[in-house]
Image 1 (cartoon, helix red, strand yellow):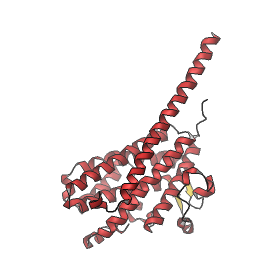
Image 2: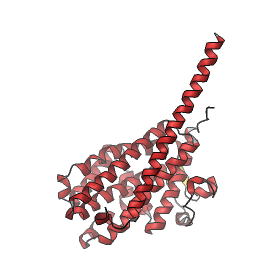
Image 3: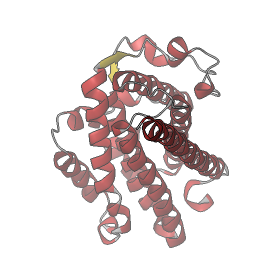
Image 4: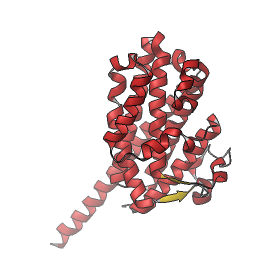
Length: 230
Length: 50
């Protein structure tokens, strides 16, 4: 009756391949390589959630004065940083570096249900011959979320209702990240893991779609902000 | 949402996310049920053995 839960190391490596697949889909959609993001190195050097928060807050405040007045959009930042940081520690400490050459399809098989819809594009990252850790990926997700938050707020200046929807979107993501934290503490069973994979892909997809649209709307002043290039 | 992010694509993605979240909740409930059943069986064995 009872199912054998995967070990933490199995969980970690599975999660990394899952995130790699999601990242491939992001790149396929946006044509941008998040691994080369200029903020990535800066955030990687942070050794605590508070340090990461400091870096991000500095960018946010520099970017948009109005945003300071809307605490709804900053409220999600703290827990999201906390959760992603602990997630990255949990995954990173066990799994170590995982080569992006080991694609999801190679590891789990191309017909694995977790990767339905992810097979269209080959892994462009494979050509980079770089390694990608769980830590990298969680930070990338964080950067993407912050970018959408800041840029989206800017775009939403004309309509408060749009801002409400944006807040709603962040609440959903924050909730997912909180659950993700629980799954790192209690490794999920394979069927549960499949669902988590699909959700992670969907979250990244939403970020990708939002990025593309915001890029279209981007004002020329945004060019001075490094994150906007992605 | 359309005004902010444009198009129906994001709405579709959010809808899929909602569906997946519901599936996740159902799956979690099922897992809890399995664990509860497993514990129940083990407790039963202990009771019968004593």
